[in-house]
Image 1 (cartoon, helix red, strand yellow):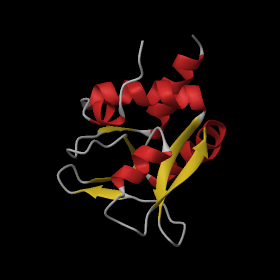
Image 2 (cartoon, rainbow, N blue to C red):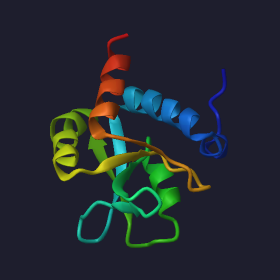
Image 3 (cartoon, rainbow, N blue to C red):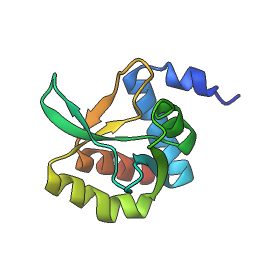
Length: 126
């Protein structure tokens, strides 16, 4: 079976990208965020839904593609253990959701940090 191209992956719907994200994160044992020049991570406020979230990607390349128009943002790797031990509690405490693998069309899968953590743990147990 051939590996889908980045364009094919990016054009998947939210649920398909979420499934791809879970598989890729478990295979590589890392997730990616974007940080600015002050090392602060990108947070996005959704006015439509009135909540704030941190977008995550399955690779540096996808994160970089998302930030192509903003030279102040660079990809930062988060290891899976670091995500589970530090980020999940921190994001939960701060009331921040997670936006999993934003698509080029602006579509995104939102979930709570604990929900993503549980989905990753469930897949790890197989």
